[in-house]
Length: 532
Image 1 (cartoon, rainbow, N blue to C red):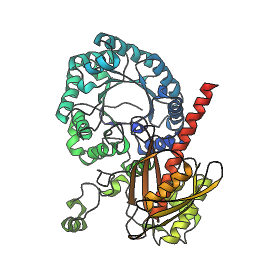
Image 2 (cartoon, rainbow, N blue to C red):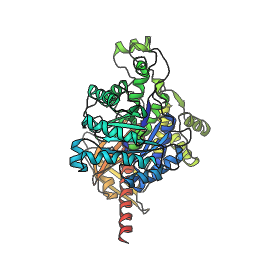
Image 3 (cartoon, rainbow, N blue to C red):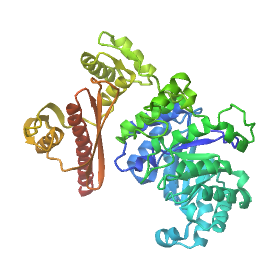
Image 4 (cartoon, rainbow, N blue to C red):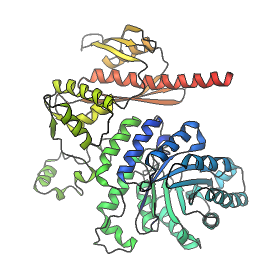
């Protein structure tokens, strides 16, 4: 990627910081699917992971580098602490990428120096340039971050950044690690760096920020006005605690309000030249993909990609929009790739039409995956007269994007009503191939189902989240169920969609159990290796 200061570089960290959201862990195949979507979206940099953190992270970064790190594709980045082992491991993982970047960091705030690093300012001032130079010996593109910059002494921060740039850093990233700053403060911090770091013109200023106070996007836009030219963000704003600055909000803010931002880039206000290289029509698809794979549902009132983002309930608003969309809409839904709820297929549609529509929606399925999805499509088409793009997306997500099928739901049956005791009977095929049936009562049909499944599977867990939402409108709409289970401080998600919400609830629970059980098996295997 050729660095530029007259536009915004979008650095996506969904696969690194975003994956640190509780329960958002992705396997290698899922990370590759997200990476391909990010490449289609047109992000400039993909931070694929933290290679030294685990063999799984190393493998994921290496495979992402090989799959999408092509000459004309995004730069692939690996995170590394300011240590030689971290940096060398990151360099090894990034080898398959045509354009690789090492992102190394060390804390600079006094509170981090005293309690986390237990190092003096002088020691950090020596370590930073040494490790940047070491990273530079492996790749030309090196990014340096002074962790907790938002709470660092500005004068010390200037010294560290100057030393890092002199050692070869091509990007210096200013993180608001704990989401503490306000827009005016963050803008002033960036301006101070521009004015007081003598060699700052030799590097791109980047920003990274968390949303603990709900100010991440506002902080970034203020930083842009003061000279920041790279934004580190995630799809749907996922990430640690309250998450990161949301990519879709930043990109669309710069797109819709480019007349306002153009002058900060030395452009005429009326210029229509995009401020980012992102293909905005890919935003909605990418948002849905990340939501489904991580099990983190997007809130209906979420800006840009929420289900209600382009909905109008007020009669006055509806009347205005029907006359002219600009009365109450500042952007067109089609600009993010959101299409009308049009009927695309029905029960008489053939396999070829189904395959063609999948390609139009951005799905690339193997022959086996296509077979599974088509069978499920026919089943849904028998129950629904009208099949929409959203229905097709839900079918693919339910049938194809799922964990290894260790436990398999063979039957679910419930009995409930206002004057009866909710009772559920389930039949589960175990990983050993045995079919077991059991029944349970609960406070409602779903509670009864989950109790019955637990009696059969005997996998310890705690249900911490259960959410249901409709895929489309209408009495025959498919319902999506997302659940999250917790065990041993780890969170595991499950997703399913069905015209029968009870069946979807059961399948989502079994999928989450399969993730949990698979994780327990991997842990047991590691213990056996260590013992031997």
